[in-house]
Length: 517
Image 1 (tube, rainbow, N blue to C red):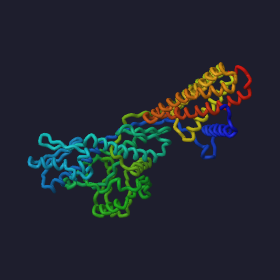
Image 2 (cartoon, rainbow, N blue to C red):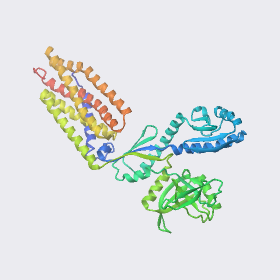
Image 3 (tube, one colour):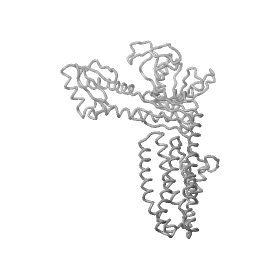
Image 4 (tube, rainbow, N blue to C red):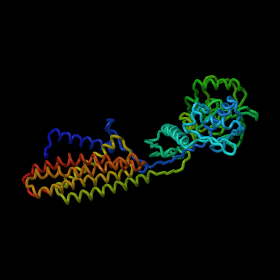
């Protein structure tokens, strides 16, 4: 019906004015929190860093198998089954056994009630596979086990990467999973990509271990280098404390030595262990090891029972801050390798904005000229609705503080074309109706009613495509599909409420005039 109640007119006017005001907040500053929102610019418009990280799960697999080694030895010892030559090579565990024990070993692994591995108590869960080849038993993770391990490592790594980046205060970072062993990090506006790369490239596996010269140490000994030199020293494999026992770590200035240190606080269990180790190890060196390198190895002078201490190592304030950040955020479950890196400068981002805005303006002007020449006064009405449509679209993006990318601008340009297309369908249908109907009111009402199905069909199919792109696509594709999807709703509102209202007002004033369109 070509009728709009006063309430509906008020509602349309209020919605339009509201979104025009919201859109203006991108250019003006308001004190109100609702009106003080802005659209965030994506990496390709603002500049920044793009990093694709790959998780190296080999150390995780080796650690799991290492834990399994002692479990297998102890378990079969209790069963009276002697296994020998337990060793790990690559991502497989090898061991041997006498011929008479081989069947028993295979039965134990297949038995659902067997509790050989405390981490994976049921081998029938397909986490681990065992085969016998050349008188040697080989244990390795099954395909399902590898997938589950990768998913677990990825979830942990994602959370820790997010913590590290949030601690730096990067604006609107985009951190996403890619497959089951990769993480995508987009950091718009980042001006120090090298620092981020350094922070994300460190596993931050912290341990406290005693320096020893006893090669017969029952826990084993390994040679480790100091972080700032090529000097090596023997360190016991026995871990006194790990980063898991840390509650907090902060950079501090040591007033006595006037050097920057990292002050740390331990949890209750860590404080107890640290106190016991420092009381029995007075006079020994305690190596503080980070990612396989010794940061410092101070001599224990007295018992430390307070649950707090300091790490020194010739730090600058920046390096101490970064180390404290790494320790607070926790150790990565596995090393991260940067396999793809892109940096977009702010100048290039501004060029993209300019190019996108020029394309939008040119397209917008051409559409306005075409529609005005083609439909005269109704073309003017369409153009007014088109401008308000853009305000509606930008306003919705502003409310949700969405991130606008270059493909997102392309989605806005496409929305302009779709909005005009809907009006063209309506006006052409009205022309057809006017050939058989002399009453302008009936002809215009029929034109809007009979063109509705075609317009809805076109927009619904486009909306379905936008939804599929949003959920199946990645970063840039999501930006395009988001603006396109929102643009479909704003287009339908502008066509059937704004443009139709203005059309009705004009037609009612000129209902006796012939050749309106």
